Length: 423
Image (cartoon, rainbow, N blue to C red; front, side, top):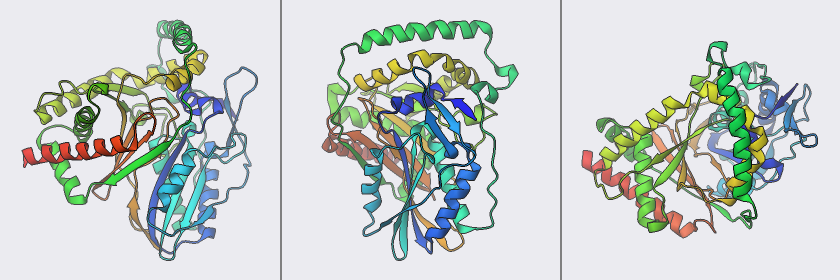
């Protein structure tokens, strides 16, 4: 089966010449075997078509997935685990370790094996994986490793985005014509904008990561509820305030948020591999306004309004007409700082069981990706077992690690102050 990459997937493919890898890690306590993990990996391949796919491109045509019936065999990579931070070193290295897109599977499983405690690290190209995908794959990998009799039920992939959208939700001819015209106009405009601009090079990526303890996490969630806003909005206001305090006039006071469209498009199942997440831009409003919770309520309302206007079914179909401009989009991202300070991806509560037959999940870490754009600033937030976890990823020449750590400290101070106000 052959399927052209969705435009969003194609952008995260980055023309195939730069790694854009997603990393997700957990710490386990108990007994695991390499045989169990390899069997679980095989079952994931049998279940998910994209784990049997390669990416091919013929001449100037759009790249496409070629899904094979019999993929190359998968093997878990076993590494020694000497410290609790070994997985961080492995994750940072895996950001830049390319996949051979013409050889399946487009997924790596690394097992940092210790005596009683070990780490599992999943690595996938972003073009086949969003946050929901990589979390579901980890959940299934653990379940298959724990239960050799658990059945891996396969599903069919889709041919085009139109297969995912109900006929009643399809855009009309007028919208299609406008999308075609806008796509070619965007191609011309972006070609002018990126002409003679240098592409960011010499990248030195890093990750600043930290947890919020369970008590503080629960206090923050309760404070957001009492203030009639969301954790997402509180995190956004706190980060933009902190970024402004550290960066001064360099801060733009704006962030972008990926939107999970799975629940809005019936054809995209929760356990299905998918990699298209449109983004909305949010402003921090008046940074001099000391009323944190008022700003958080405004950001919540703004986010809800912009998500409501997205119309994911139309967006999913109409973006397919932007393949002609995909190359220019990628170059634009690699040459411009953008109009935002951060990409904030709040993945919420991760639905991963803590207890399995033979082992337990001790820690879950927020996923990460080192985006090859000129502005790679990304904050990923997750919740597991009532505890928030943060990963701030950037690049030394764009935002130094020292400044990123100062932003982290100011961000946590903002949240602590906000919670104290509602206490």
